[in-house]
Structures are given as C-alpha cells and as structure tokens.
Length: 342
Image 1 (cartoon, rainbow, N blue to C red):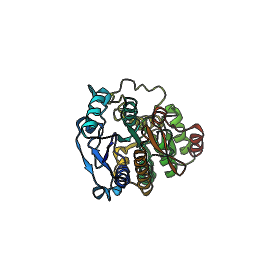
Image 2: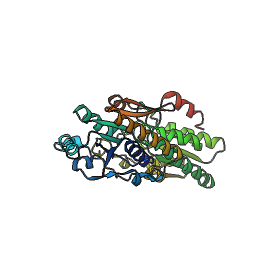
Image 3: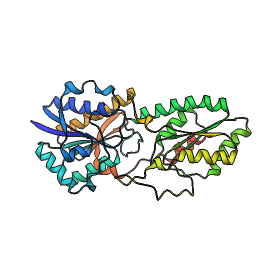
Image 4: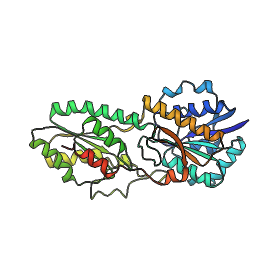
C-alpha cells in the first residue's frame, strides 16, 4: 500500500482541519495511507505522529486550529535536519509529504524537493501573501473577525470621542488590514506596502475633527512602519522573521497620535483572536478543495507542486515559483481604499 505524510507548520489557521480531511478522504479512495506528523516539521524530524483514517477526520472541518499541532521548526537550522527527515520518511515507508503552511513551511518543502524528497505544498496563511493563489484559506475568517471587532469599536470610539488604533496581523503585507478596514469603515488603513509619516496619519484625524467628526478608527497592520522608524535591531524567530510583538506599532501610534492631537487615543491589539476559532464557510470549502487537489497530485505522482486557487479553480503550480514571490497589496487597490480615508 502507498503511504504519504502530512504536516501543518507555522501559525495555526482556520481551515487547516478541512485540508487534512480532504487529503485523507481522497487518499482513502485510492488505498493510500496518510500519516499525520505532530507539530509540523518537528514531527518529520522525530517521526512522532499517527496514521489517520477517514472515520477519525470526517467531522474535523468545522474545527479551528489543527488536530496535528504545529511549530515553527526550521529543519534547515537543525544539524543534519534534511537527512533526518529523509530517514524518517524511509522508516515510515512514506513516498512523499503534503506540507501545509506559509512561505516558511513551504520554503522548507521546496528545499527538500530539490534534495530528492517528494513534496506537495498547500498554501496556508491568514495574511494571504503567497503568490500564485488568489486566496489562502483562513484569510476570509480573519478578515471577518477583524471587521466585526472594528464594527464594535466604532460605537465605543464615537461614544467617548476617542481615536482607536486597531492593530491587526500582517507581517509583510496588508491584506487583512485593507479588506477588513474597508469592510468596517476604518477612517485610515496603514499597511507595510505604503509607509507614511506620523504627520500624514495625524492629518486624516485632524481633518475629520475640522468637519465635526470627533472620533476616528485607524486600522494598522503589525508590519507597518512609520517613516524613520528603525526596527532592524528586533529579535527574530527561527526563520529570521522579526518578532513584531516587540514592535508594538499599535501602542506606538496611539501614543504619538494623542501627543500630536491632544485627542484621547487607545490601542487595541487583536492578536491571536484573528486566527482562532471555527473557520468561515468559505474557508471550510476552500480548505477541503485544496486538500482534495493535493491528494489528487499524490495519486498522479505529481510532486514538486503547490495547489492554488485561480479564479474558481484549484490548480497545481510550481512549488519553487510559489514560494519565491510574495503577493503584496498593489498601488491601485490601496488608492481605491484611500478614497475613504476621511
């Protein structure tokens, strides 16, 4: 009997369990066993995990998180990491691995593919910043959570004549901020792709006050940088990403806005709320479709690909191309959103 492995790496994301379910169900139809590694690439190093049956996963698509657990293990920084993964695959008789993750997790999968190990990627990130795919599962859920939070913050900001700065996820790109901010009527949206000065930010707030609007909502992605801000000395994780929780852009902005305007300002950091909980209907379906397509690639021995949503179709794309180009918010989209920065 053919056997493959599956793992979920990086931050948890609504829709992960739908992917696992899709892979297991489709593989079971072709008598292919699926071994679920625990804790992402850490499990691939140690072999910790279990064989998954369809009966075990048939109802998990409604659940948030991942039944396999996750980690930010970078096997390229572990001594003999790739060799250990290869030994694990041989010991468990696995012909390949379906890696579900973001650019870090899939970047590792791409390197292992080049080293002769069979890999298939499934794009997972609430940031929606992976190229070659129109949307990633988890993004819709996160955007709805943020939009609902900002809807609620409008009422308290207006009641107390305050400015509220809402910090949302988005390390390198501002997809969540711009989508949720537009949907909920944020008065200014600040994203990494388009740095601004504090005077530009304050200008929008003061213009609103001149027009008799005595409250403001500012939606800012965690990776946004005020021009002149230096974050090069920040701590980094195993993949070299800056630990943005140390940056506190939301609190930094709130303090500066209050100092420059005299307006009472508060910061709300939504943090892990955005990626927790049950996935939306869209993400349940998208995760399932991506899982099924990944399994189809296994059946057809088409390793070295990532599954992607293009239009309404799930298609295979070259894994190398998918992980080397980051999808950023384009200038036209941001210009469109800026019509409502008032």
